[in-house]
Length: 259
Image (tube, rainbow, N blue to C red):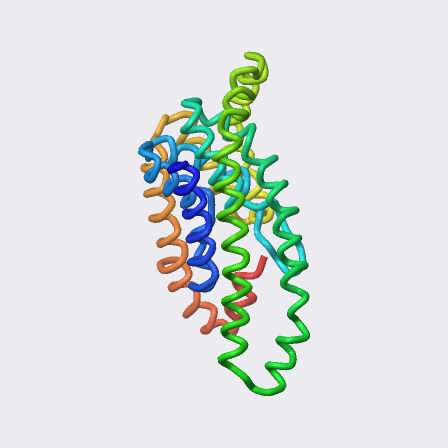
């Protein structure tokens, strides 16, 4: 009961903070899982699960009318079930995405309910009733917070034993496959990030970083420091010297740095 209350309250409070502070990104898995882990007494597992799930849900951002899988519920319940079952991050991988997809459907139901009040909101706007609009907006927000609390509370209260049974009955081969997938996900996540950014003008930096890791066996921190220094040199030193030269020859700055 206590764990169910904690998880439900965390989901509701994080969603309230996210919307009241203007999309502050506190519902991202790295934050949600860490908070869940801290409150359930296993911060290390929470951080590890959050980092893993962040790579899975990296592109799950609501834009316009598109409703992606609910990362808040997926990360929160996936982390809670992982800690409660005493298993590793592979359990979070197995549970988080299905839970997030289910919560996505519940969120759509809440959106439908909130849409019933649009005519009332329009009438308040025509009357310039600012206080009424604020109250209506907060009421809708609290309705969605209540949905997150109920989902988290019910799932933990009635689903923990079922999840534990499910985890214990997962075949070893599937668990091994999930473990391997967990190791590959960071590479896939960074590859997806590089895909829209990589072009002929910056691929040399990627090759240089790969060589530093593969052949010199440098740690990530060292590569990051090299990258910061290289970015500073290219941005402030080389570009700063090239601009006066371009002005002297009549070349526009945009033309000089255009690919």
